[in-house]
Structures are given as structure tokens and as C-alpha cells.
Image (cartoon, rainbow, N blue to C red; front, side):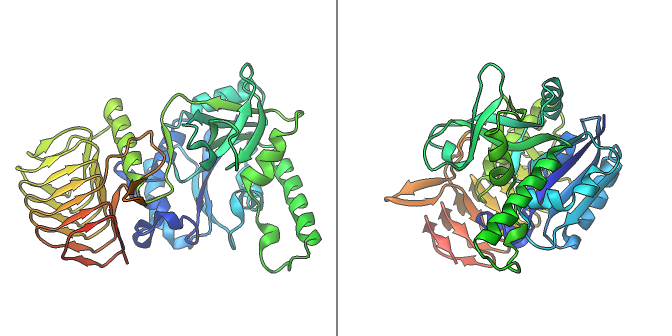
Length: 414
């Protein structure tokens, strides 16, 4: 049996809720838990023996992934190919698959893994594949349970509790359907492309009926969830099954959601024994990932759930917890960073505080109510921001290249 894998990476006009972090680095390459977001996908796929080719599908410029793919090809020699397939415009999650179907299926591929890039997960892919093969399924989707209040933000499904056959699927339903949701991780039988072709033909008919101009790109846009999966799940003759994972999962949509995802990946690496020990005499509360080129002074206290990137400098007395510190940042003495993200080249002055509100990994919302107004739970600092000495920034979103001289609470700094 031969499998291939597709990671849907989107493009620069998508994922706007991830700003200001995506101003500095493309969302799929933002580092969480010490590695790029999609590196975690590749790491999981490398443990599936049948996967030989991995394709990144999206509409970023080809240069965006060039260095990453080169490094990944060296790190994961078990893959015959890791290749970026660039869409000529935004084709949608199903349209990109259909457009590149010949390359994806090349080499007598039996099954295709499809994974959204903005998913944080333990990725039990071997178990998913075993379930898929045991039931001779056309589609097996990874599913999990969320709180009833969060369910409408995801693709909800109804399944037969005895067989796990999916009976109904609606992406982001307007009313409550189920608290079982799709994780955005799938295994498809290779024949799925026949079904995608049918969905594509239905799309063309809809465009023609609505008399839309054929040059606006809409006839090529195809949603994997809405246009393909939803009709298939309603067809009782199709073998669509769910694999319910008991392990962790969350979506990385907003910038703030990177912090709980960071915690999940670090905790997993620590429990697996794959988290490198920090080379510092500072007080460390695991799990913590500190890049070897970073300098953390002996008097600092770091952790838990902290990622510190390359060439970061942390002075004595600094306290960092539940945060992501990207490359080339400076955290001065006695500064405090809690539940926050610092993008590249940020400078935090002495005795300053940059803090958000605690967000559990199981929470799917990263906003809180303050004075009857919804604000950021996680404080996010864009690239090249400078917080002066003795300044407090709490529950804020700060765009790049800002200088903060006075305290801020619950604000968006444009």
C-alpha cells in the first residue's frame, strides 16, 4: 500500500485573524513548540510507513517554502518528495486537491492524507489509517468532542454510535447540531477524486445558473468541506466514517491561539522525552524550549510552557511563563512576560509587564470580556515593538513597529 499526503497551507489573503504575526512570517511557518507549524505535520507523517510523498498546496509565492522544504527534505529522508504545489489563484480546499490530482496520485497511490495546516494535534495518523483500512472507507475523518458552546465554530457531524459511520455533516452550522466535530485531518481512498470531480461539475452548473462571469475565479473555487464532504455524508451509499481521537486537538486561527497550541506541543514533547534540555543556569519549570543560540541569564525564571527562539536575550530577574518569544527579542531585567507572544526583534524594558489572561489548552476562544467589551486574552506584540521601562501592557494586540511608553489595557494599537 502506498499513501501520499497533502497539507493545505492556504495563502497570504487567508488567515487574516492570525495578524499581526502573519505580517512577519507566513502563518504555516510560524514557530510553535519550537518548530514551524507544519513541521509538526511532517513529523507525524514521517511515522506512517506508507507515506512516500508530501505536498504542500496553497497560493503563497513559491519562494516562501523553498528553504523550509530543503531543510525538511534533509530531516525526513523517508519521504521521496516534499513539494510545494502553487495554485494559480485561491482554489479552495477542494479546488486545489482537484487541480493537482495527477501529481498527488502519481505512483499508484492508494490513500491520501489531507491535513489543514492550522491544526494543532497529537496526530494519531497510524490509528486513523488502520481504522480507514479496517472499514474499507472512502473517507475517514478524524473527529473530537468540544464544548457545546464552541461546536458551531467548526464542522459538526452526526455519527452512528455503533459503527462510527457519518450520517450528516455541516460546516459551521447556524444552530446546534452536535458537539462532535471534524479535526480537519482526513484519509481518503484514491477514488475520492471521482467524487471531487462530480462536486466540481456541480459547481460549474451553479455558476452558469447564477450567470456569474467566468473570469471572477468563482467557478474554480471548491470547498472540501461544503462541496465534497457534506454531500457525501448525506449519501448512505458512501462509506464515510469518523475516527474519534481521545488525544489533544485545537485549531490555530487567531494569533492568540498559538499560545495554548504551544503549551500542548511542549507538553507532548516533554512527556515523549523529545524536548531538549535548555543549556542555561536559569531556573526552569518544564516544559520549556530554548533555542541553543538564545542567552538566558542565570537569575531569570522560565516556564512552564515557554518557547524562546534564536538569538533572544533574557536578563537577570526576568520572569516568562506560558509565552512565545520569537527570534532576536530582548527581555530586560525584572521584566515579566505572561500569556503573551513577542514577535521578532521586540524589546521589553526593565520592570515592565507584558501579560495576557490564562487560556487553557481546552479553550477554543482566546478573548475575554472586560467592561462589557470583548478583548484579547493573549497579548500579542507585532515585530519590532519596544515597551519602555516600567510600562504595563495587558490584554492588548499591538501591530508591528510600535513604541509603547505608557500603560495599556485591553487595546488594539494600530
